[in-house]
Image: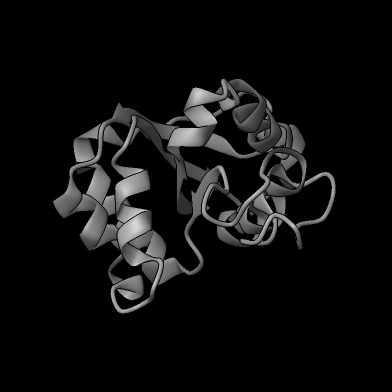
Length: 152
């Protein structure tokens, strides 16, 4: 099974959307294998968002993501990266389809509720930034035999 990294951003936490977001992920057969609520340091935020370092919104992004607690998650499931990105919706909430997390809950690109890894390489890097190996759990959900075909 593939793993991906998701972070519920300060606006998701402060607006009490955590349960609704997790429910959407779990209803699609994805499972949480790690979870951690934390206040991100500037150093961690800058490392996490290093690909945006030279973009004009970088400082605002760092200020925002460090302004309040976030919920970091490792999600596991078949094609979890692609599926999660589909559930999350477009980065710009104005372009996100209704029924996606951002399409339903976010209003502005700078406050778009959630981060989701965009590739296996990013997922691996981001998971290692936020979690130690002993914080990630391997377990079987009782309904996995119903959700996935044998051999998946």
